[in-house]
Amino acid sequence: DLATSRVGVVCGRGNNGGDGFVIARTLVQRGIDTAVFLLGSVADVRGDARTNLEVLGRIGMTVIEITNAQEWELHFSDLSDCELVVDAILGTGVRGPLTGLLETVVADLNGLGIPIVAIDLPTGVSADSAALDGPAIEASMTVTLGAPKIPLIFPPADTHAGDLVIADIGIPLPLFDELEGPHLELLTRERMREIVPTRAADSHKGDFGRVLVIAGSLGRTGAAHLSAVGALRSGAGLVTVATPRSCLPIVAAMAPEYMTEPLDETASGTVDFSAIDRVLEMNADVIAVGPGLGQAPGTAAFVQALLERTGVPIVLDADALNAFAGEPDRLMGREEVGVVITPHPGEMARLLNTSIEAVQHDRLRHAREFAASHRVVVVLKGHRTVIAAPDGRTFVNLTGNSGMATGGTGDLLTGMIAAWF
Image 1 (cartoon, rainbow, N blue to C red):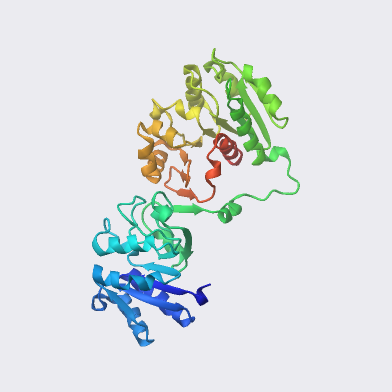
Image 2: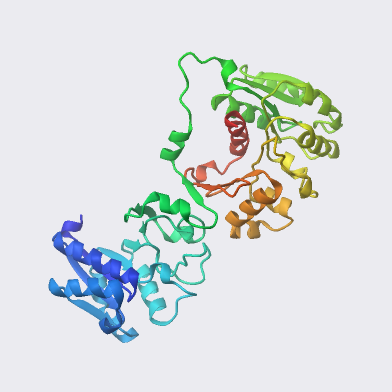
C-alpha cells in the first residue's frame, strides 16, 4: 500500500530523470512520502528535465544531489528505509557498460531486496539490444513509454524487466506504422482472441478444410497422433494421418476422429521416397509434415520432393526440416504455395550451419533473414517465439510458459498451424 509507504526516486540528469521528477511530484501530490535522489548536480540538468526539476522546488520538495561515491554512501541509508524504489536514472540513454558511480548505485539498489520500478528501461539495459554488456537494475516492474523496447521482450535482458507495463503517452498509433525499418508486433492473449474467427451456427465439416498430416515412424507414432489432434482441436474439418504402413495400426488405434493412410516405408520403418506419388494424389487443402518422421535418406528425399511438387500450403517441422540441413537452399517457398517452417533453436542452427548459441543470441535477426531469403514463414520456437514473414512482418508471442518445454508440444503446434493455414 503506497499510502503508508516511503518511496525513493533515483534520477539521472537526462530525460529519464525528468520522468522521475514528474513521478515524484505526482506521488507527493497524492500524499505519499517520497524522497528524490539526483545522480549528479542540479546545475547540470537541462531541457524538459530541468523544467520538471524546478517544479519540485516550487512545491517545496528537496532533491538530494549525489555526485560521488562518498555522497552515495552517506545517503544510501535513506534509500534503505524505503519500501519501493523508482529507477529513473538512464532509461534509453545507456551507451556501453556502466562504470564508476553508476555501477556502484546499480549494485547497491539490487542488493536492497525491495521492489524496483524502472521507467522505460532498467538502468544498464541498452535500448538497441537484448544482450547485457554489464550490470543492470533488476526491476520488479518496468513501465515503458509508448511501445515496448527489444530488450524488454527478448532474453537475457528481459529477465531484468520484471512485469511489463506499456504506458500510453499520447503517441498516435498511425505514427508507429510510418516508422522506417521492420516492424515487430506483440501477440498477446487479447490480440489472439481478435484473430481467431467466430464460426457460423450452420457450419459443417466441409467448411473448414482437409489437413493431411504426414508423420510418424517406428517408435515415434505419438508425434503423428499429437499433430493430428492439434489440427482437429484447432478446427480442421477433416484430418488424415499418412504414416508408414507398419505404424498405421498403432496410429489408428489412438483416436477415432482422424482418418489414416498407409505409406510405403524404408527398412527402418520410416516413410520411403516411393510414397511421393500416392501422397500427391491425396485430397488435401494443407499438408503438415515432419513430426516423428525419421531421418533415413529415403525419407529426406521424400520430404524434398514433396516441397518441390506439392500444390497446396505446407507446414514443415522436426525431421522435415532436418531433411534440408545439408541443403538449406532447397528449402524455398513459391509464390503459389505458402510454406511455414517451425524450427526449434537446434533445428534452426542446423539449417543455418551455426550453433544454437548463435541462434539464441539474435533470434529476431535469424528468423527475419531466413524468412526473407527463402520466401517462407519462420516460426522460431522457444521462449518468445518469433514469427517472421517473407515481406518483413514480424511478430513475437508473449504467451506460453516453461511448462511447455516438453516433448509433444511442437507436434501439437504443427497441427494447429495446419488447421489455421
